[in-house]
Image (cartoon, rainbow, N blue to C red; front, side):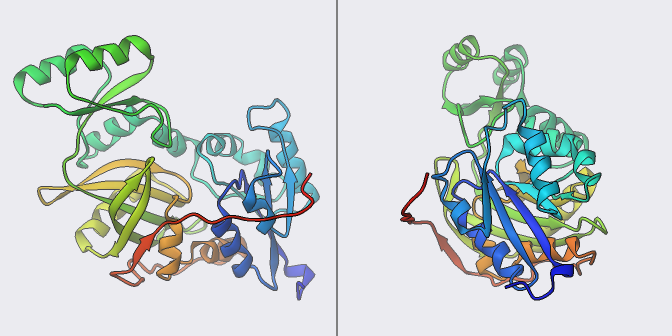
Length: 330
C-alpha cells in the first residue's frame, strides 16, 4: 500500500518483454512511494505480470501507438517513461516534448544521441573524429579493398547492417568474395575490423537533472551467446573509467547507457553503445549499482551524487533460464 498518495511516483516501462528483473528492481525502489506500470504487445510477455499494472498495446509501428502511450501517461499520471527495446527509443526521444508537456519525463538521451548509437558508421566517424580508439569501419568496397591490399586491415572482418541491433545479420567473413556476396544480397551494410582482444561491457547512468556521470559499472565478458553476455565478472580499471567518462561527456548522453568495449594491446576500443538498460544490467544491480533508484531520485526532483566504481569487484554473473506460470491469461 502506498503511504502518501501526494508523493506517489509512477514509472512506465515500455515493451517490457522478458525483462522481469528490471520491473522487480523498480518495484523495490518504489515500494511505499509509487508503482510500476508495464506495457507489451503480448499478454504472454512475462515481465508485465511483475508490474503493479499493465497494458496490452499494439506494436510500436502501429499508427496510433504513440498516442496510446501518451494517453496511458495522462490517465495514470506517469512521472517517468522508458523503453527496454531499441526501436522504441528513437520514437520516445523524437517525441520527448510531447511527454514533457503532460508532465512525464522520458528517461532517454536526446534524439541526436540516440540516432548516433543506432547508426554504427556514424558512431565510428564520431569516435574517430574525437580521438577515441575504435574498430576500422568501411561503407564501401573500394576503400576496404584498397586498405586490404596495403595491409591496413586483414581478414577476418565483420559485415553488419549500419543500423541494427541484437547481432541480427552480423557475419564474420574471411574473403573478399564473401564480402561481395553479402553486399550484393543486402543494402546498407558496413565492414568492420575484427577486434582480437578482451571484451568488456559498461553500464552507465548520467543524471537527468545535473548531466553528471553518476555511476559506471564495468565487467569483463567471459562468454557470449546470441549477441548477449552469458557469463561475466565485475572489474575495475581507472583507465577504463576515464575512457568511458571522456566519451560520455563528449557525446552528451543522459539516463542509462550500455557500452561495449575491447582491450587490444593495452588500449580500450569503443565498439557499440545502446542508450538503454543493457541485457546484462542485473549483474550491475547485484554488485550494488541501483540504477532504478537513481532514476526514482531524479523523478523526485533530486540530483544524484556521483559514485564511479562504487561496486563489488570479482563478482561473477552466469545467466540461466527461468519460467513463469500463470493461470487465466487472455
